[in-house]
Length: 75
Figure 1 (cartoon, one colour):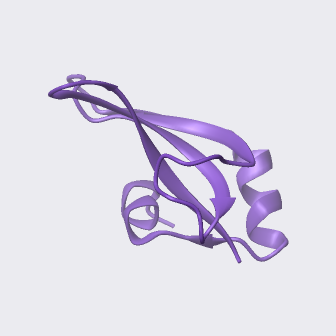
Figure 2: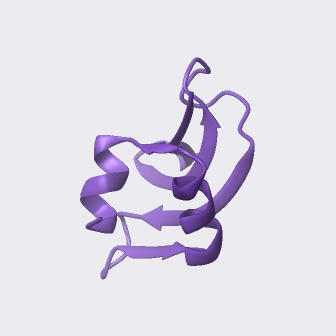
């Protein structure tokens, strides 16, 4: 099963997340199929960018969003 979820980047106490498409059986920071955006919760306005075209493609082929991605995207 394919999932759209976040993988943690950045350094200690300065998290930065990539929004990625991955196999649900992989670890959080394990290998991923494609990176489709990012989320920066530390910045003043909580930067987030998603490639809508790729996001919609993965949803159309059956990828499921994690609860966290669903919450931050509002979809």
